[in-house]
Length: 282
Image 1 (cartoon, rainbow, N blue to C red):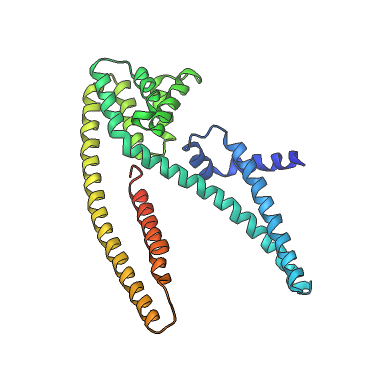
Image 2: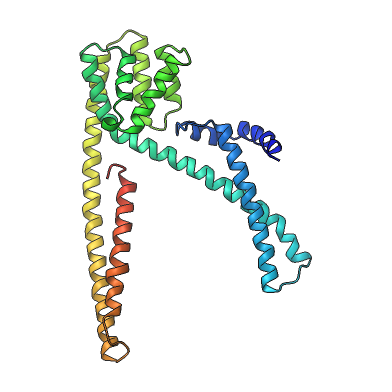
């Protein structure tokens, strides 16, 4: 039963170029063919469950199995399969974007470290080797990108310039792509790595400063809105509780607990999610 699914998943993997590109940028341990095979099984399982659930619902509700109800089964089957596939594809795309954001947030520190090593005449390959071992300092995703470059050199036998260009083409971060392609050009032409890295470090530092300033400004505005809304909601709920108590509809402060147990936690959760979305380091 499994072999036919494998035969179907292989041509699907060849045609899904966008999903393949996104998946490669996630630097997953398994290859894209395995992901497509798993996605196919999940999509088919979702389709079967959706169709079965539809039939069970018809039976429980006592609806007759006529031509109109039965003709919907293929549409439900196909719709559930497409939905499951697109959810899987979206999760990969989201993981790619999140990795890119984390790399962008930490690239200034990695560039500064590379500049320090360049000033000490550390070979380019050793720079990436050192960064790959410092994921706790410069971010796991930056370290993973550096490790990928090393694997291209040591396992695939590429020269460092070719490895940089290959890694640049499959990186989820535009900033990391700019850094790598510049390193490839400078190193390949015999230019000054110190001068190039100094310029990139200064540019990333300025960009980081502006990003932090914009983040702080947005957080101040968001905090003001949050406090205002929570304050208004608390006053409104307290007034409702008072009116209900005066009318004899309530004998306690149960509605006030709604504010403490739902409004404030929910509002805090929303604010935290918005902070996380605007800055992965928050």
